[in-house]
Amino acid sequence: MALPVYASTGQRVWHYAFRVICGLIFFYLIAPILVIIPLSFNAQDFFTFTPEMLHLDPAGYSLKHYHDFFNNIDWQLPLWNSLKIAPMATLIAVALGTLAAVGLSQSHVPFKGAIMAILISPMIVPLIISAAGMYFFYSRIGLQGTYWGVVLAHAALGIPFVIITVTATLVGFDKSLTRAASSLGAGPLRTFWKVQMPLILPGVVSGALFAFITSFDEVVVVLFMGAAGQKTLPWQMFTGLREQISPTILAAAVVLIAVSIFMLAALEMIRRRNERLRGLTPA
Image 1 (tube, rainbow, N blue to C red):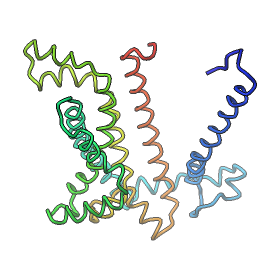
Image 2 (image 1 turned 180 degrees about the vertical axis):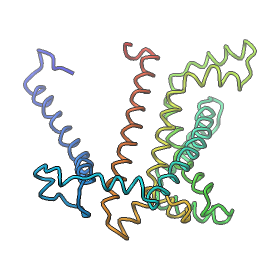
Image 3 (image 1 turned 60 degrees about the horizontal axis):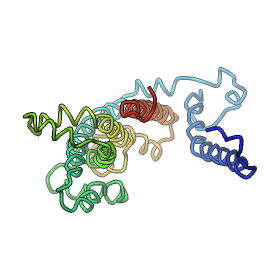
Image 4 (image 1 turned 45 degrees about the horizontal axis):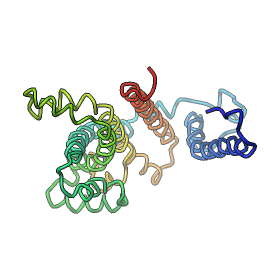
């Protein structure tokens, strides 16, 4: 946003100082990621910038760590486990979180504040406490160390994100539309799918993306809940840092960064489309 011509000297100083501060904060947050990316192309088997890399010598760069990541069974099995766990956990989180958000949006629901606090508590409670509680609970019902145990645990972590995004979408929802559909003979289920769901879909998709990223990147809960057969990609990276320092971990990190950037870009596109559909921004 440009400064108006009548801005005072103090306003101009703060205008540019604010941008400098934001730039420094952005650099502080993004610098560690920028360091990882070139290191993942290191031709050597250690974590450092070699003289060849610093002089931009092609001999100092290699794709061997990416080749190891995409061809080594020690990395491919955790990757496929993550790709099997995250989508299923996302589906469960979206289904339960959307229903919870729609239910809490009704004016006649008692104790909405307390219920909302309980439902989003996995975002507030330290993850190690949630993981320990899940471990003891799932152990009693025979789900600890199973595929579905990890899926349900990750779904519980993703549900708060779905509830928050869908609830935010429902704030501007015109409830007279559902009443009109009911007056025309549509049942509750048909009204939800034909009237309400198309309008809150951007919030549902946004929550699904957050739930997927949460499950795909999560490591603490899977360490408690998973067995050797449910080892995920973050788990393999965590144990790899403890047991063997391999630059392949950097290649895996870059893959995770790429997935996160893709998800966030898709989320931003959905947000802008939602604003255009609601008339908040010009088409």
